[in-house]
Length: 120
Figure: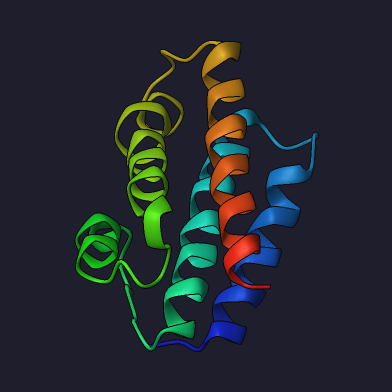
């Protein structure tokens, strides 16, 4: 179980790797995925909820709507789309196109924006 501060530190480290244009897109997508997981978990930690595994994001957010309120579905659906549809194209194969990377950026950006609103 990690604290909000611990998750935010992880988010910042993964975000730094994701933003490094010299990294291959596969590495950047994996870093984006891990970073936004930690950002979501930081928001959860504020409400004393600890997700701990990326596979539990949907269940924990649905069970604890106090974390994101009426944006709960938006967060877990965007995260799940990255996790189950987009990320595997980069991490387990070579079936991705530039549009897939752009979709990862758009969805992760949406999650980041919501998380930053929650953390104000």
